[in-house]
Length: 243
Image (cartoon, rainbow, N blue to C red; front, side):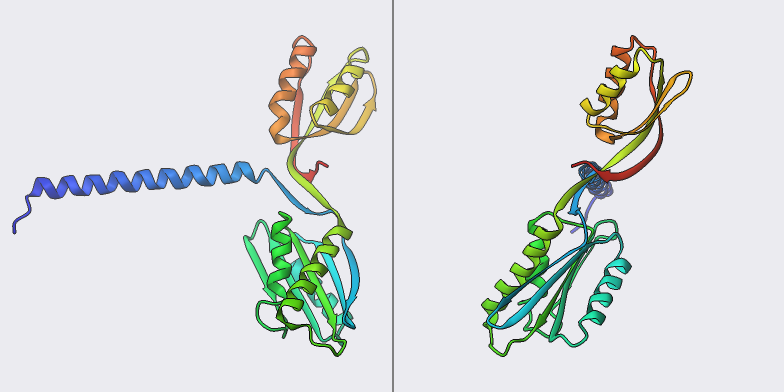
């Protein structure tokens, strides 16, 4: 069978076009993911909670972490504290590094670390590490009992720590005269911002932060309410609690 040159070229061009379309779809998806990740949910503070089932003592420790190393350091800290425990099970999720990991630490496979990780995921949490210490009480719990026990330990630890949404924010600086400072002070929280500092000199200088997604709306409202006299300058970007 003979294939013409023109047919081969046409096939190659079609394949190239399909490849370009695939790359475009992937890039669009990554861009959308970046937009979605302008905010994320984590635990508010380090906490612990304990409970006992069939004489086995479970202690759930949880901490917000930003890197895998911070998670490993926390796991090592709890494991050292409870060096005599039967098990020190853990699970953690790190947002920037794209890491999810768990360990059953000697419990039957799938009965400890995975249930703990599942609790973190179902709560939509990231940048978090949970360590669950168990002191065996002499009564076997069975696979189902272990799953329920470790799930409950992780859940009560999350509840004890509380959760918070962190969003990518901009720190801004605005300067106005004294006649407009009251309006500016009310406009900032109205747009979801938080005032960090106010300096009263010849004019009033206000330092505040806003979620990045609200900056354009704030700028438009500031321009409109001041008849174009005032604007805000962005000085920094960072993640901060917004609830």
